Image 1 (tube, one colour):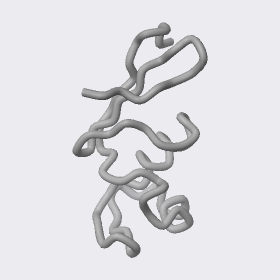
Image 2: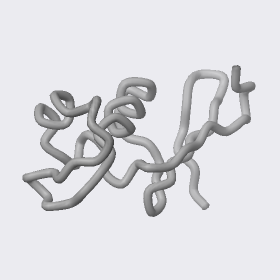
Image 3: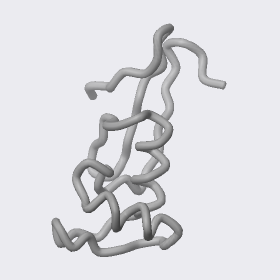
Image 4: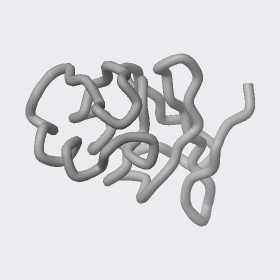
Length: 80
């Protein structure tokens, strides 16, 4: 429902799936907040999984907030 040129954004993305133990994250995606054993950081695994699934990988993120811009051919990162 986002038009080309529009933005999709959200919060609670402290760590992206490529930055954490992906297997453990997928197994714990229903939990609210977990400790990643690889990095020693707390994060929301469900958000990491959902964002990775929707965008098929990395997104632009700033201190837990993420944002992407829709283009005619897909999505692109946003430089603030």
